Image 1 (cartoon, rainbow, N blue to C red):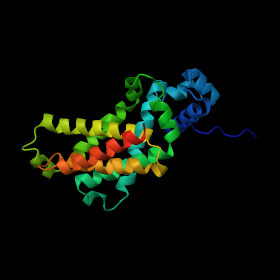
Image 2: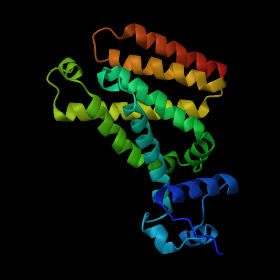
Image 3: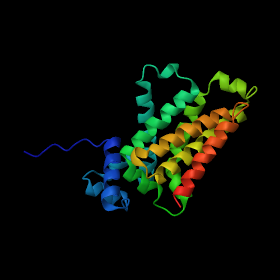
Length: 219
């Protein structure tokens, strides 16, 4: 008796794509090749994705969705202030990246043109900026002196840039359990919040010393 074919889902296609990329050291050449190798039809593929590039973007969207799902399982999360929510997001998100480091490192270093690599993060960027908007508290808005819409967008954009710097640091981090990334996250998030206040100089100096030390040691 023939075995019943497993139902193809969006998640199963993503898993197949990541496995192929890691095992072959490159992305599939075409939807035809990829679907034939994994024994499903092109029609099944196109019911979930428009092309192979959209899978790459979806992978990072799924990392975000899983992070938020895990955060919401913490019954205390809603009571956290903005800074604590952002730190929780960072630590949870990067734990997921660690579990998939081989793929993430390969995908974000694939092309010499970093802008092409970052295109994979376009969906994640939108999700992250929306997340920042959702956790921005009235207290922060008051600190920004009657914050206008364009100012709130500026906060979201600067948070995204900070996220990209953190991601770059993590990709280059060779410390055990990526402990230096944890330190980087704590110091950079602390600095970003203190920059909204009057007296950020101590955190700025502390963060600067940390980055300088890392650059010197890695030369």
